[in-house]
Amino acid sequence: MRSVALSAGTVEYDDSGGGGPVLVFLTGIFVNTTLWRHVVADLAPDHRCVVLEVPLGGHRVPMDPDADLSSPGLARLVAEFLDVLDLRDVTLIGCDWGGAQLVAAHGLGRRLARLVLLPQESFENFPPGLPGRSLYLSSKVPGATFLALQTLRIRGLRRSPINFGLMSKRPIPHDILDGWLRPSLTSPPIRRDLLKYLRTTRAGEYVEAAARLTGFDRPALVLWAPESTMMRPANGARLAAALPQGRLIEVHDSYTLMPEDRPGPVAAHVREFVATT
Image (cartoon, rainbow, N blue to C red; front, side):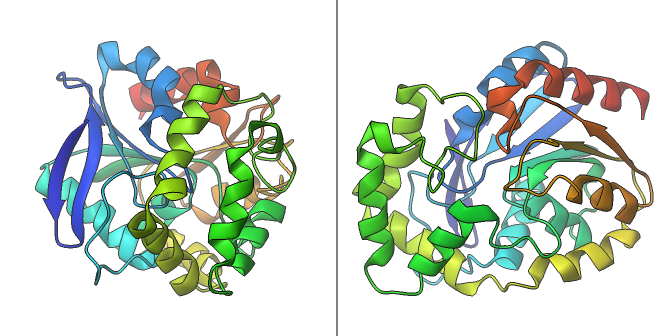
């Protein structure tokens, strides 16, 4: 892991290096860079793969106490990260957290050449599904999120519908999930960062963002999971229609965390998309 200082604090990231097309992957709630390990392993030989650990509970370095960690604030953090690393002609790829949409929608995508959206928050679907709503509601009660997180210490409960059961169709390896959850389970400043996001992101954020996506005039690929009830099957086609150069590809046999469930097809579709646009 590498690190870089931004105006909101220090963030960590992985960088495969190399001189190929630049792919920047974003993480989501309770997830770190290892979500993309299989996809990056496939694409890194002929692409530069940069995975940003967005401070959403799976990150290990707390942000500054006064950092703006609302969804728009995090979108600005992503844009600043691209600036500081001087990444150009970027293909921005997001899953679970809808930040890639927000970068495009809020005019922060001057460094982007393309956009790839995997199953994620969109339109009216925030907070998304049973796990998202449960976490969002717990953030409104002091101490409730900490108590809810304690159930995740028990490996047998992690696959319940209120936790990761609706996130991935296949069980996530224990060592990977342990790494995702350890920061929020053990660090009060990391939980503080997560709660900032949950408490400051508005319910209508993605409805407004979708209306602004018409201004993103570069190629966009929506890889959606029609079996993911959490991220609403119909929203993939809606996102593709909202983007002037959007195209939709449905990836079956997957839930929200498509890089875990179907990393091979994800890598193949991203490679073809970058090569032909």
